[in-house]
Amino acid sequence: MLPSHAVKDTHRVLLAVLVARVVFGVTFLASAMARWPVPWYLPMERRWVFAPAVRELGMDWYGRSAASLAVSLAAALGAYALSGRAAVGAWLARRGALTGAAQLAALLLLQDVLWYAFTLMTRPGNPLPVP
Image 1: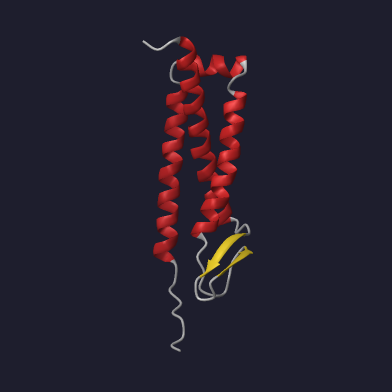
Image 2: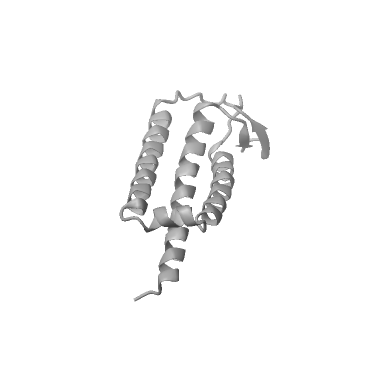
C-alpha cells in the first residue's frame, strides 16, 4: 500500500500530464485552424522560416508540434504547481475527477487525429515543376 502523500503526488503528476495533453491538442488544432505563425521547414532550401503559411514546399508539422509542446509543458508545470493547493487537492481526491480528465484528454486526441487526417486527405497536391 502506498503512503497517502505518494498517492497525492501521483495524482498531481497525472493531472499535469492530462493538462499537458489537452493543451497540446488544443494548441495544435487552434494554430492550424487559425493559421498562427509557426516555424516551417523548407527542405528544398534547407532553412526554417517563421510564418503562418509558405508558398514553397514546406513542412509545418515539426514547428507546430514544437510550439504546441512548449505551450503544453508550461501548462503542465503550472497545473502541477497549482495542484498543491488545498482546493485543487480536494478536487483531486474526489472519485472520478482524474477519470473525467483522462476521458477529455482521450477525446481531444481523437479529435486531433481525425482533423489532421481529414486535412491531409483533402489537401490538393501541387506538384513542383520539373527542373
